[in-house]
Length: 279
Image (cartoon, rainbow, N blue to C red; front, side):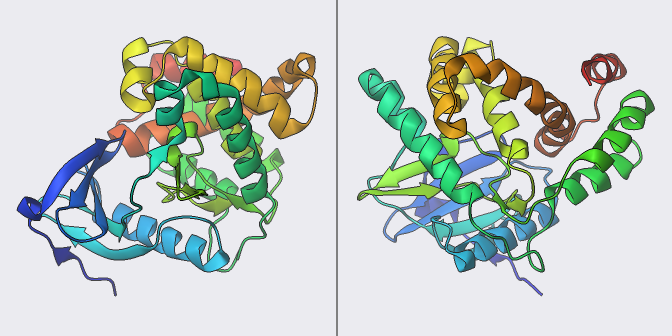
């Protein structure tokens, strides 16, 4: 049984923000606290902690998870602090001339993770996670659920590692090492689950969102995809459109899930109908 340890936020300095929570750096010790936004289930922090430990045990390059924490209102996980780190997207933002180098490094890191054999007794299947989500009541309208559940049956399961929230904001570098972060959605399965998310976030058109989440412009995000995708797949850029077509079902299926775990909101009926038409 996991226990949450209380922390005093006065001992920490706010150091970052993501879609699900806020990060704080300890003032005197090498620790980084990630607290989910208010209203998140305590189980979510436990699952993130378990997946981070499982990833570390497999040898995935990622900061060591230390303990489950709470400030009395929010819950989260504390990790070892990686000093002098920068995310890949921050590097591109601050040094645009390094776009190609960083995007190619990201492709290499993705391929290396997807080549790692998962401990399937300890790590969940992404396909099974999606099946369980769509089987729930009240989170997805029937018009979308009725199309997605049969489509999920046709998706293959492979016993290789997935990040679960793979995008260029979730990898950092320090001291010559590249490390995956925010690994709470760690799973195993077809790599398309991860790559479809890389594609989807690269297509975000809202400049405010891309700036807040990635410190990049929409044009930079799209250019990153144009460099990353051919390198990841090992094909000519002209062949990427075919790959994108193969990613679309994964992207549509995952979008409802990511929306729900981020905002705790069911998919609206009109959006569900548009998503169902895209399948």
